[in-house]
Structures are given as C-alpha cells and as structure tokens.
Image (cartoon, rainbow, N blue to C red; front, side, top):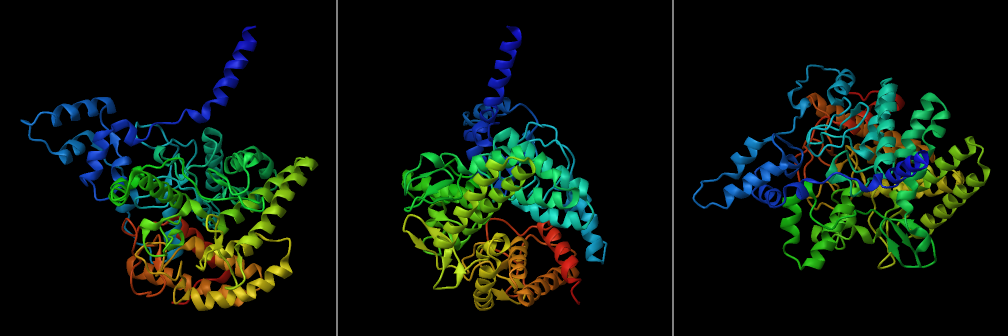
Length: 527
C-alpha cells in the first residue's frame, strides 16, 4: 500500500512539475519593480531584472513601502536600489583584445563566454546543470536559437563536450518546463524561440553518431507537443496559442507568448508605448511585442501592419515561413529517431505530418508574384509582400523535391540580388524603420540560412559571394575595433549597426559560430 501511495505521489509531482515555475521580478517586487523601471534607474531595462537581491525580496519591498510612505524622509530610489541589489556581471567587458588573428580571438572567447553550471542565487536566473556559452554583452544567459549558430562554431573548434553540454541543458529545460524558454531567466518562461533543438541534435549526431537521436527523442516529442498543443480541437480559422487552423483545415504555427503585459526586461519601453492605448488594445500590442521576441526578430517591419510603425505590430496574425519550416524539420527528425527505435507506425505518422506541412507552406507562403517564400497573414488571408531571409528556410530543409527547389532557387537568387544583397552581405529587410531587424542591418543567423539554402539548391556562386562579403565585413570590423558584433551594418560597411532598444553588443556567440563555419567552407577572406 505504501509503495502504491509513493508511486502516486511521484506521478503527481511529475504531472505538476511544469506548473511549478519561479515568480518573475514584476511579481516579486510589485510597485517597487514598476517604480524602478519607470524611473530609469538603469538605462537598460534588462539590468534590474538580472540583479541579485542582497536581502530577502520581502524585506526589500517592506522597507521600500515604509520609506516611500513617509513624506518626511528624503528618498532616492536609485540609491535604495544600489544599496539593496548586486548588479549583474558581464565578464567579457573586462576582456581586452590582444590577438591580431581573428581565429585565435574566437577560440579564446569561448572561455570568456562560457558559464559553469549554475547555482540559484535568488535572482531571475534559471540554473542549468551543465556549462554553456552565452552570446555576450547584456545577454548574460543562454539563448535558445542563438545557441544553434554558436554550436556551428563550437563544432569547428572541436568543442564537442561543450556542444553536448548545451544540448543536455536544452533537454533539461524541456523536461523541466515543457519547452525551451527564450532564455534561462524566469521572465522568459512565457515563450520559446525558433525551435532549433532538432538541428542541435542533428549537429551533435554528426559528431557522435545516430544514437544521439534516440537519446533525445523524448525531448524532441515534448517540444513538438508544446508547439502543437490544442491543434486537434481546432476548427477552420480558429487558433490556440502557437497553433492555427487555416480555412482549408491545414494546421500551421505562429509565434506566441503566454502573457499580454509589458516585457519585464523591456518594461519602460513597452509601458511607454502601450500607455497611449485603451487597455484591450494595449494588451494586444503587448502580446504581439512578446510574440515578436519569441521569433527572435525583435523588432522588424516584418510584424508591422503598416510596415513602418511598431504600434501597428500584429505578430500573432502572421504565419511565419521560417517557424513552419523548423517544425517541418522537427517532424522529420522525430521520424528519423522513431525509425532508429524501430517504431514503424510512428515513422509513418510523422512523415505524413511533415508532408502535409510542406504542401501547406508551398500553398500559403510561396509568393508567385514575387518569386520568394513570404509570411502569410491568416486574419486578412493574404501573403506578405515583404522579402526577408526567412524565406530561405525552405531551401535548407525541403529535401523531398530537389529538382523543384533548384528551379525555385533560380528565381529566388534573382530576387536576393535585387532586393537584399548589399556590400556586407544580406540585409534583413528593405525597410529602414529604426528597428534592428530591418535595413541597414545584417545578422549572422540569416546570412547562414541564406548561404546554406542557396548552396544546397545549386546557387553556389551567389552563396559564395554572400559568404565572402559577410566574412570580409566581420574581419574588417574586427581589425578596426578588436570585436565581433551582434549585428552589422551591411549597407554602409564603414558605419556601425544600430537601431532597436539597446546599444549593439559585442562578444558575440552566433557571429563567432557562423564565421568559423563559413571559413571552414570558403576559407579566410582576403584583407
């Protein structure tokens, strides 16, 4: 009897483990959180949510209310915050570049960007059991989609152990929370990011063999279930969180966040924007801001109804071509793992899901008029006219029909040359809005997906051209500054990248990774 009770208790705790999530800073500190962020105690809203309290949060909050409720007391919220919190540390800020060789610099940076297994310190960090690589700068934690591109470089550096540790960490996060959060912070738990876990597993398997697929099959399936939650109950033109059923019954996915409040890590920015609108509209904008953060493209005219202003953001209306290609890839990787497990019936199920998704992506996202894959607005039932590197994901993953994809790639190559190709590589969009995921900026992950897709589908000359432009830009900036950057101005290669909510960061995980990967294929650029 005792054994049965013990088993039932274990099952209960497992079943409820996803619900036991840590509180976020806004919930812990309440009005104090709001006041700190709106007073701009720190220029970057992310600083405060990453701080570590020197006392118990309850004691800090109680003292704050006591001091601020007494008008006779002269009170400085800045001094109070600095006295009660330890600011987050960014080790690479103290790293002085001495290497003249960019490859040596990147190799040395792996140790600077590495974090050891975490211990809980009472702050917003979600502890991870294995070492990992952070992007750099203000990004002091692991980030989901960043990590795949970082791992491309880790593989080239022979850092297989670090690669495997990172995959283990993402598996741990899936087991702990049911999905991979945007990053390992409590305030990121309400959303995920582009689902690259299947590609990480595939990359690790390329080093360690196919047994890797079997090892991570449970987590691959859990992640898939997260993205597909509620799909079986939907009727046409209905949606549930990340899932949408289109008019013809096809099931596709969108980016989503569970919350419709200002982002904790960008509280001042979101609160300032949405305070101008009625509550219902403000909540919709907050949700769409958060969903854009889930996309990794935070922010871009790609998500704006008028393609100009962030106040018109409508991310949750959009069926993104890149997201659905990644889920197509996830379905195929699960099918491969099921095949290795000799589960033939499940292999057929996941291959069928993938085939149906491929047909749907072609139907709704291949824009015949432009000759490019674009996003689809399921509310207006119209294709986007905006050309972005997200449209290159199909060329990386659609292996079932190589001749067809090669034919499409010829048209796509012409569009890229006309609309996206710049002196320093591929620009993110044609629109210059002041947002960082628009012109004139280019980003390492989008260069890689574009180059990979073009090369795979026969446009090898264009792929090499883009790679060489990007590598040269990275090297030129390094020679001038001693840094590898989060993003680059690919239009005017003598000017630093800008735009967005924060200053451009250096470090930088995914830039390092893509640089090493491209050098392994195309060689070092000529200075």
